[in-house]
View 1 (cartoon, rainbow, N blue to C red):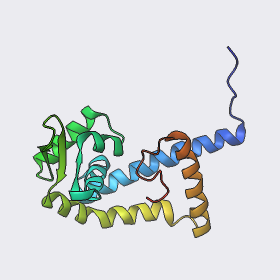
View 2 (cartoon, one colour):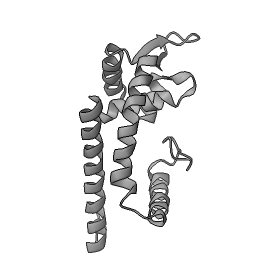
View 3 (cartoon, rainbow, N blue to C red):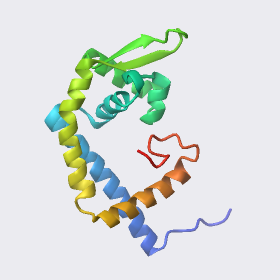
Length: 162
């Protein structure tokens, strides 16, 4: 077995900056959503992905893939969203084995109420510290990383459009 190609000092600094930035950004977004809307970031993402889908509905399998969640974790989250009246599950009309998650009008209203604060927090922590040119370079870098991590282009933004 050969030794791994250890990270040099600059790579190590980049790696740690990425780790801390990712973690702190996700924590900040989760705190803001919890504080202002009583909604975990993961639940917000489920509601947002449903809101952007045709008919505001996706199969549970499609939704799990989009939000990168295990079926059991997604099922638990959708149970909670269903209890709140924000999502409903129905059987697929052509395949009774397939369950569809649908965003309710109440769920859409909760999302619409939460979205302005969430967008402001994303802007404050991710876009405001960067110039336009830095943001565009950062986007190019993220797409290069995404192409490596998601070669089948399954992520909602993997096509470079979202």
